[in-house]
Image (tube, rainbow, N blue to C red; front, side, top):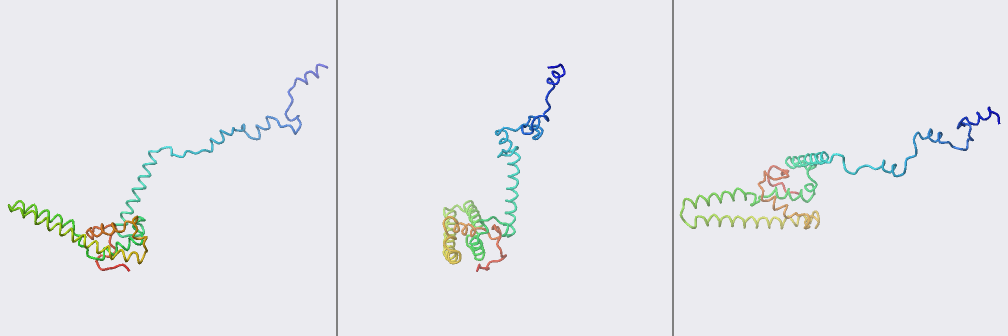
Length: 208
């Protein structure tokens, strides 16, 4: 072998001189631009954290949204906007209960002012009149008034329950609906202070 042939053998072989069927490393790198990632690394890139990066800010934002919703629902109950009230207040039998209670005169509606009045009278009589009956009489009046409230609420619920069953079925008075407690708790509140607000300014508008 001559010296010229020896020098040619030492020169590096160009990748383009290789057969087209044999892929080279340079071609693979040029085609992808980067080495093929491992499966573990590829899966890790597709994972997203289930919790936000800033938990404190997320909780604060959630509380703000909840407070805003509660304020909007309270305003709806105060103004009588039934479409924006809580879902429980939009149930048809609850609307019926409210209209029925608001339409009648309820003895228990004046329980709070009457109770304070009786207590005040009892204190005054006990301080001014040195008599054992002076403090007993107001208590008797108080218990009599409570009995009258209980009887009035029982009669109201007896009639209202029949109307609810006839219109909405047994589901409207089931134990889980708490329709009875909803009715009597509204009946012992002063009418103008009730929430949701009565739909009519005066009594006598009975539900259909």
